[in-house]
Length: 147
Image (cartoon, rainbow, N blue to C red; front, side):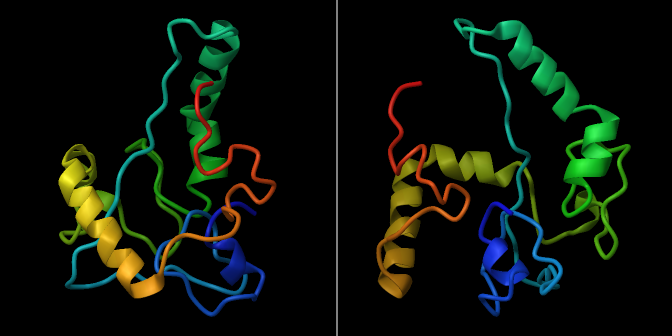
């Protein structure tokens, strides 16, 4: 199970401040009622010089299909498609007044703000150490370089 939710899902951790993955069976998603929270749609693209463009296009076509979004993605989080119902316990993302899916890309473009935020997080919890829970075999490494 990839992501930071894996430690909660397998019972190894009580909580995680942000989750990439399904926290079940030992966890649940809790969203703030009044405080803002970050949300964004994952991006996908086929590079112009991709070695296997047809395969990449087929994968993106499958990933964004109603079937894949409903059975894989929306089993634990919001789909990027508005015609796919969110999982039990979640309202459509647009119904939450405490998030703005367009705010994250704008924040990421402000590199000075990103570095300030990184410094704040490191002040509280320290520098990132160990393997990435989404990549426990460290196949990409912290700085994967060119593809």
